[in-house]
Image 1 (cartoon, helix red, strand yellow):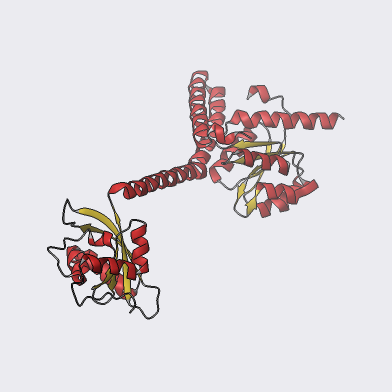
Image 2 (spheres, rainbow over the protein chains, first blue to last red):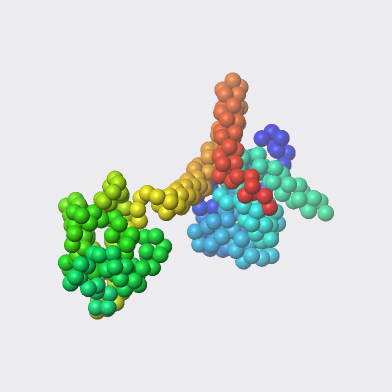
Length: 133
Length: 221
């Protein structure tokens, strides 16, 4: 964690409907100093993300009322600049679909905290360089 | 009824058997693909026609009258529960599948799965019963198919359960323990080390589960 303490704090929007996953990812990200907003369904995410001014979207691909690919498509230009797909399925086809939809990365569950952290660091660096320029 | 064999004179002779097999296209086709079959009257169970494979499974010296082959050779051996099941299926005109034991004239008794379905014809009230013997090359082929299907089905079930629940719980635990280890580490260095080791162990278990659920070959883009 100490290695990432220098990371810019991010506003992260988490779209996930599994309670344990939501609880502990949120706990972990807040512990690192990030702000976390949560939606458990695609409809709620579509309503809340545009106003949230989030830097990063972390979305499960399988959602009760849609999927993470459709979510990004429907958000269009209102989407956060950095997006991470998380899913229990990680075939080549799933990963290609995530990239085609606009996700920067596709993490396959169960992934480790360090894997998510590395991506957030990337997002923070992008945010940092964007604010400098 | 066109499929009705002439039972008036020596109905179970080899010539008659041949005629019966050929006169009933369903039994004949089943004979071609190696399945014993018999057509019976739905109300009495009397044999209407059959193929040679079926007759080869009946001890004809003990049961000389072929119209009774089904009742005496098959139904008589049903347990009371099987008999109820059979009669319920006949009266509801529903297809039925049952385990039966056949006693061929030479050799040991043979287990078989009997599948019975009512004739499609509106005016007919007969059932065709097909037997899949639980022995021999055909059964071996069938068994292999069942085993393969069973394995795949079980693999799918386990994989779905891992994906839907276990993987999520491991993920939550791996993230949660990391936070706990950090917080304990700030309070007590030694305890923090223990918690950190535990977090590491859970991370390795999570990684193992990840590899199990998502074999590397399937992950390749």
